[in-house]
Amino acid sequence: MADSRPIGVFDSGMGGLTVLSELVRRLPNERFIYLGDTARVPYGSRSPRTVLRYSLEIAAFLGQSDIKMLVVACNTATAHALPELRARMSIPVIGVIDPGVRALLSRTKSRKVGVIGTRSTIKSGAYETAIRGIDPGMDVTSLACPLFVPIVEEGWMNKDFARLAVREYLTALRDHGVDAVVLGCTHYPLLRRAIESEFPSFTLVDSSVEIADAVTAMIQERDAASAGPGSVRILVTDVTEQVSDLKRLFFPHPVETIEEVVVPELHV
Ligand code: DGL
Image 1 (cartoon, rainbow, N blue to C red):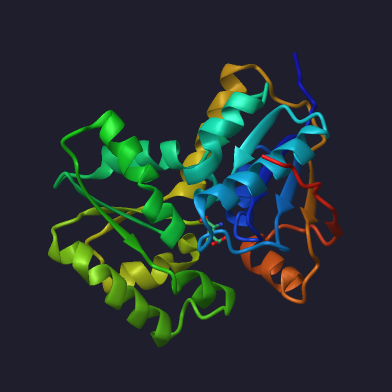
Image 2: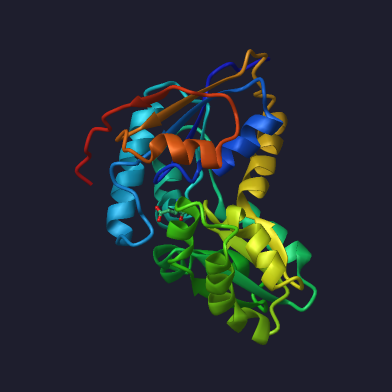
């Protein structure tokens, strides 16, 4: 039977629109509600406790819209909040890390893999834990690349500056013999070209593509597809000057309205 309830998607800001973009492409009949926490972005430099609290607040807020599934598009939020979100919600909650890890493990030949993400994601060790949970003998090198988010948000992905930063951060992975790297941050798919031109030997795993495939499979397995028509609502917690520009950068679909909402605080 068709399930026309919306799918909730959230991120620390606008970068998670890379995930929404992949979802809309695969599931055009679904109704999506995206929430970008632009008032509190970035999450990548925050403590685990704070990221957890923000994530629980957003989940509670989106839960009020009778969503059928919650997609955590933010790697940092997935790293710190996924188990707690799953424990508290009565609907399926899917995060970016597990689908990315499964793809990563299926693509390495050298059995040396790389994980790149924000400081907070890397410090959490969540990717390593997920990798070792499947393959305890895998050689994992994790690297925080804090300059990548501002480079993408400046729109400098195709400048020499971006290639220089890519070379500076990722040479260590190549020197270690890594052959497959998961792009463990919403913004990094936009650096794919810069990374490929500097390190053509890497196989890159785009976690936004992998989570979109996983959500599509889950909808099919549960027979929970909507009969349509599809729609997209984009909500933010602060309409900053950058919001429209970032929307265009990350989401090449025709949605012009961006609604501002207030997410109530929780005392957790
Ligand atoms: N969305 C974050 C992530 O995927 C990146 C931006 C931030 O630091 O909030 O980790």
